[in-house]
Amino acid sequence: MNLNFLDTSGIQSASVATLTGVVAAASPIIAVKPQWAFTPLSLMLVLMAIGALVGLGQALASAEPVTLRQTIGRTLVSTAVAMVSTCIYYLKPDVDPLVVIGVGSLLSVMGSGVLSDVVKARFGVTDRKPPE
Image (tube, rainbow, N blue to C red; front, top):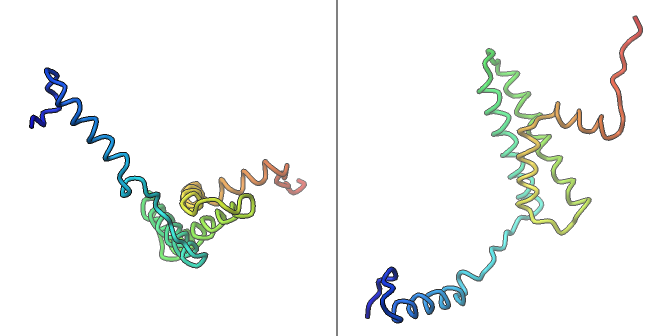
């Protein structure tokens, strides 16, 4: 049997390629959709870990000298911002947990300053300046 799929001289290679594609498409291993089993606690722990790693990475990557207090503070703030992504469940309860993890990563990378600006713009809050 000729298994050279680039050989176009015969029908045999085309039929083998077609049968291989049909078997692969009907395979139960390929057709199984992965089931992500995240409990609320495990999802919270994953989000906390992602937020902490992003905050720690941002603190260590800054050009200015970083103290231990600043590093811990940035890590905690980034973790809290990542936890905000669980609010997606309020809008759409049947959302995939990987979406929540992705949004949590995005929010922790953006940081609390950007999130604060978005909320202020959405609700029309302006910074009050003290009278001079």
